Image: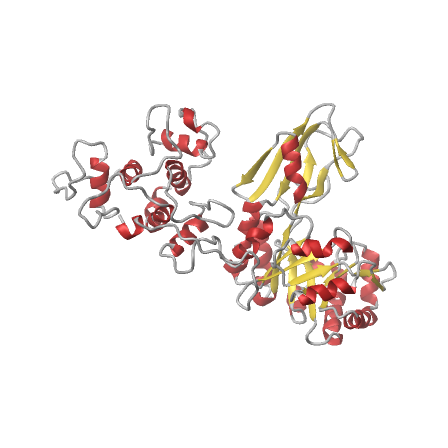
Length: 541
């Protein structure tokens, strides 16, 4: 058994608040982040960017369209005042060139790619833009080489300080045909600043689509892996996140006869539906994506734009905070350039409270870079054994509660998906940790203050911590060994657990020679202890 040493310096850790500025400033060491502007009118564009709280390096508005004849059309949404304002803020404006899934327009544009590339270069210079993001979709693989050559021409005609980037279909399955095969990742990477992988639409709007995530963590990661395996330099890979969900009606069409099979909707609409109809949001542990379920009663309805949702059962798969956070770990994991997103105006407001921090592996504002438990907290957070007390706070010096202790060990042992046979504790009804507490009780890890009370918000003391770990690991206790602690008496319930943890070297005494059975623990202490006992927990999972 690995020996773990934990001293009073850990027990005595006090709360430290080290807050970063609410509006992050980008540096060369920070991950790149861009997003698209498509929804809303130009009068709202600055407001949409304001909501990102300084999180963007590039904004990509819908200024360039491809006509049916393959020509460039400057859209009415281009406003030089917006471009000037973004430049004052240090944000680059790189409009996207779109055929809006019009295959004919896309092909005709590529047939006249030399002229089109020159037209785009002239427009970029004329309007003092910072480049172009090419977003041609729905064209099949027979035009792959023409597409690559178009990007080469853009790089040729645009000044060197202007960006050329490409939005490319995610291709986790390595398809070479269809519209996925249209994008030659490796060849494109020779000419672009980056490829923005549209790592979403794993499910889509169609009766043929499976009901499931817009972007599971597996789909998202495999999309990045495909680019790396194709030889794209990591500093040219940008992984795109969805700020939208997809909805299905599970029991037939609406009253008007419309089938809802993967209909796209803004992430901002999900909470309203759940609240109005008493629905439920669940994070799927496997896909690290969330789904909302709700039922509309007979005689009631709800409009999503012009679509009327009538009585029936519905499910929406979308990415909420924990799902987005899981994806924000991926760029650092693979060493890629950063992230993109489709699209502004669909994210929930709190997204930008944590986005840049998590993208840059700063998971908690109140865990400073030289905090004694920083590495422990990060590793235990990565494992999912402990989460923050808020979207960007860990509260390392906060007293560890009995509920938090129970939840941590249940997660560490992989038991959180068990359904308790009974719910014994009356004082945990409606508590966020009720299920995990009852799991821990049924498995014999924790006991209550009485048969019907647990005291979930009460502090977890050192003797309770010892008892909890002894219940799990059942260490052998050498009763012939001298008890060095004057405040630990043999007659007390905690005597053997304390001696077991002491003899294993897991918990030691305090500098004054006592053990301190009733001294409380902190969240940082628990993170450090769990981190140092990782191997032990993994062995019995």
